[in-house]
Length: 109
Image (spheres, rainbow, N blue to C red):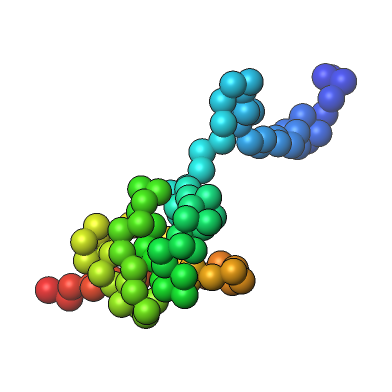
């Protein structure tokens, strides 16, 4: 008889580990996170031109601004399509991050 019984031999657990981060590589950053980081980086400049206005950030640039969050977001989505675009109020007091999924039209044909 084999020293390890059949039952014990089949009960070996497998651990699934995340892929290693190799030296010189950086983990992937989401587009939303890149746009949020750009907003924070641009904030000193934004304060001069857009204080107390909402701005839309796409490809790390201001692509729209206005007084109403939904109007600014709607205009940006209309122009660039449904993709992550960061919209926030330019102010001294940063608010907590809220992700708002866009509505999707589902056809029932």
